[in-house]
Image (cartoon, rainbow, N blue to C red; front, side, top):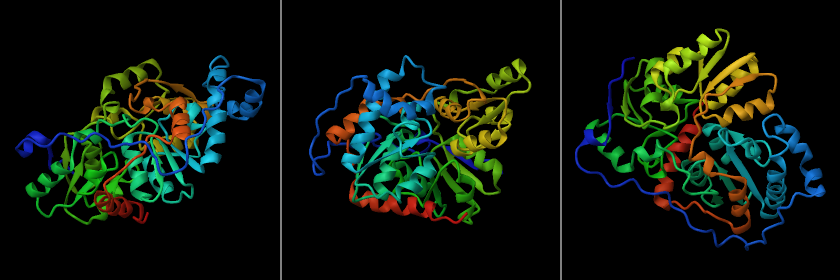
Length: 367
């Protein structure tokens, strides 16, 4: 279905409030600060982490591992002490994804798993909206993010005030928010979605027209897959919007046998050149199932490293666009979170309650 329209703040009139910075404060109520453990590379550390290095030896060199292993050992031990669980997005680096994370996945998988967590503390290795989602779903747990500056260009592109203005412009039209949004935005919409279930969510509303925000490219992809008219927002992922169709054609010219798979946050000319389009989870499963000889994953490049660690016989051609926000999360900052219980994610209870409805509506949607 052709797009019904695409809007940004300048199209709604008036000067909107500045986008709020992510909230954070040091967690004070849960437990005491611990002593920072030794971070020396010793025979004991080598023995304790040898099985973990086996997972990542294809993507982390023997020279790098002695610098990482002491952090890995300390984090895994302190998780037990703190009764903490680490959730890590597919874009986290291999030493985090494969060596300290308890639960990994895309935004939908992490949201679902967050509802099942029994631990007292959740450490979110991802960006701030992901940590907010975990807090929304676990209001009575302590949710920490190792660096509260880990933002998202999509989440920063729209506010709750923008959503209210869209509702005024298009009364009665349901609003779907990509999970890559702040709690403030989630509180104003009817239902959330991820790139894994965006089409399903839109069609579940049984409406002829839907407002879909904030990713204009994901909105275009959804519009191409459904008969529902889509009104979009002028947001974009700063990682995926940098890819071009010309870039993909150059890969094919260099090797016509190469397989190209792309994330739907990419521009339309990129998706037109891809052999498969899907969420990060769907991309990973595609590689597992198809087992191509060579593949180009058109998304944040740490995911290729994580898949390479699991499938060393698949050659990854890496068009490396790094997410600067995801890369704020490091082993050292995760360890700081465990030792000092920082940085805590705090959401206004009234906003969290409203946001919870839209997130839970997504999670409870039947497949």
